[in-house]
Image (cartoon, rainbow, N blue to C red; front, side, top):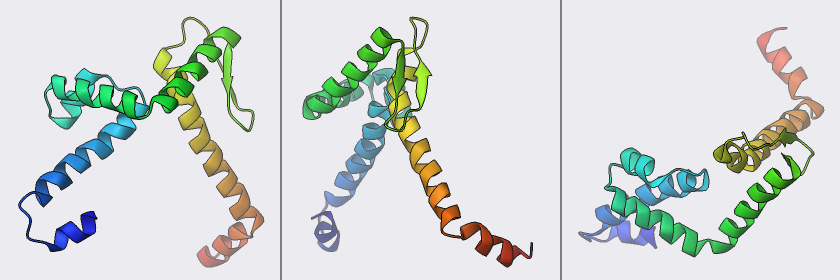
Length: 135
């Protein structure tokens, strides 16, 4: 729909695109645990607006928030948090909440990268790269 709007002379298209851009940035930042004050600074918005953005995100994605909160609470109770492939991070009362909050996302990305590199090597990428650079 956004593509179709771009072809129509609509005075609101630029404003919609600007707001969409703000929400794309905010969505990821909110999932990583950014606070309203920092989000306001980063987006150049008043804090009352970012408070609303965060509250709206929590309402819209309530299932995600319940799951994420339960993961963090379980990590503090069990003393660790782990990924699907077994990477673990020790958690104690001194571990920052955002560190625990971000671990599943950061570790999942690291696992995807690790698996990609392993598959690339298994498929002969190393040999092809060496032959291209003359080694």
